[in-house]
Amino acid sequence: MSLERFLPVLLLLGSNVFMTFAWYGHLKYKSAPLFTVILVSWGIAFFEYCLMVPANRLGSAFYSAPQLKGMQEVITLLVFAAFSVGYLGQPLKWNHWAGFALIAVAAWLIFME
Image (cartoon, rainbow, N blue to C red; front, side, top):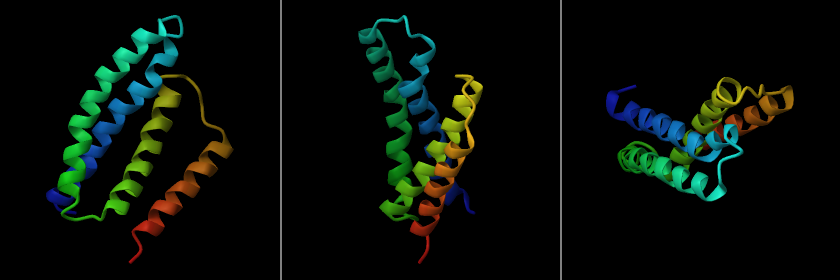
């Protein structure tokens, strides 16, 4: 895979790390006021957008919009799985993995020509 085709994947990976923290990172701080959590999450999401928009813009030269979305969903699941176990301490069960696998199969189908 050339760097030009791989760069959108790296940007999607980075953006998903930020977005996962924006959406779920506050779960470790349940005593924090909701309004504060929302503001902090918006701040984190800004950096997600700074990576996601270029990922889609650059990626559109090589991938269709549905392919970019399918790729993003698989990356999101991989990042979330690591985050759930490593940061939140919430291991995934067999049914979570099975559901994630079905989503991965769906993404694979999107790439079929």
